[in-house]
Image 1 (cartoon, rainbow, N blue to C red):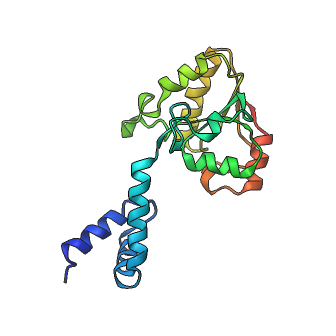
Image 2 (cartoon, rainbow, N blue to C red):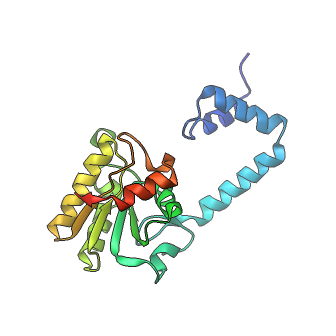
Image 3 (cartoon, rainbow, N blue to C red):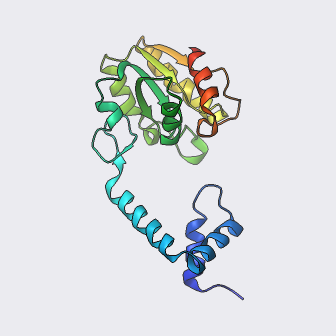
Length: 198
């Protein structure tokens, strides 16, 4: 017996979420339809609201409801430090660690030529304009320690060095192949304080 087209469509939509396979999508769909229709309405409204209001910061590319996010507009942040991360989740992990008080640039991914993701897809021209503005003294490479993250860090590091900007790379504590989003606060704090020239 196959599910109705509406149920099948819901399951397929839920499978778009990271880590959600067919069985999990089915379990979620049935839970929302059988036991938590109010929850399903809340999810639908929150998602619609976020899609309507959230956009990318014009300066750092982080997700924001304003043209320039709160981190970029804060006078308390050290504008001479620029930490380059792959995703808003990585930025949030670093912020929660409490060890960094500079500004960010969010790539929204990593270089992956096989997937058609090159410098333009990562907003590298915007990053170059930011580096050319003259205020950045140190670029901290905080991309994930995966093959793609390392390649991206190397590429961004070269761009900064061409402009005579000091480049460091987070190192200690973050395991090779690990992702910042899943790294605990203490490990992130150690990685940040132990960064090295790249």
